[in-house]
Image (cartoon, rainbow, N blue to C red):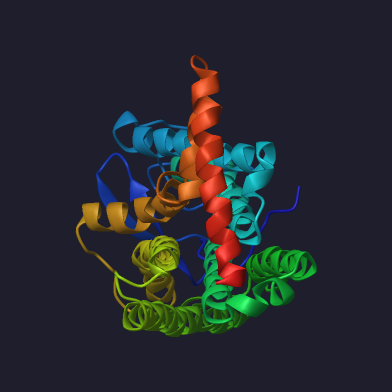
Length: 379
């Protein structure tokens, strides 16, 4: 079977790969080639014939100290993202355009628990070239998918707040499906395009692949990290300034003795709900930035560093190895426990005793939420 040889954040003839050495408790930065790694202590490596395993650790080794947390986290990632998807499927009242974007993001985050973390752990244990390739392709896909989905949600809220009267004319179901399809296609294309520059055995082929990889890493960093952050920073500044402007107008034109005081209270409640929702999405953006920035920094370090990058082992393990996993867990938690419509319907999913009481409470809350959504168009 032909070996998978690609230029990526993977072992190549020219490009090192950071991996955690469980026996020594250190991070190593080593180069891996197409064939088995030469090691005086393991003379039979070159005779293995697979050409896919590297390093002198025990193949398939499990280390409870370092592997338990990612495994537990993967289980929680799968559980919370499936909860979001199930809630969305079961309750028609959740099927707004905004929530549809969030469910698409949940499906993307689900891949982290189903594929990303298992492949990463297997890569760390066996140093299998093919598995490491799959792992890094998966994480690149998730990084692009996450930032694109957060951008889409931010734009959706921007339109809902700054162009409330025209929101349903602008954000249609057709537009939603087109944007979601584009997001998934873009994430798949950006991650799989790396397969187009294969690393050959020659030094010249390796240098060519390295040049392509440097250009690719710079382009993805600018297009799917820097530019989206700048765009979303502008969006959230405009959103909060618009909400603040409407709040000032409410207080300016209505007084407590005004006959429209009740309308004022509704508008204030609506603005508060909008502000809270936007704050949730802003928090998701901050989490993405904090957790994924080390990933992009290390991708440049791997390609451009002249000397070994050697910070304390725990720094790389926590901020590079674990941080990527955490976003896929925190994202669904943000809108399950902070976004009102999801939060109020969650008891109906887990409530077995007192089902009528749960449903009554949920229906009452959904009526309020529906009224607030109608205010987005009519207020």
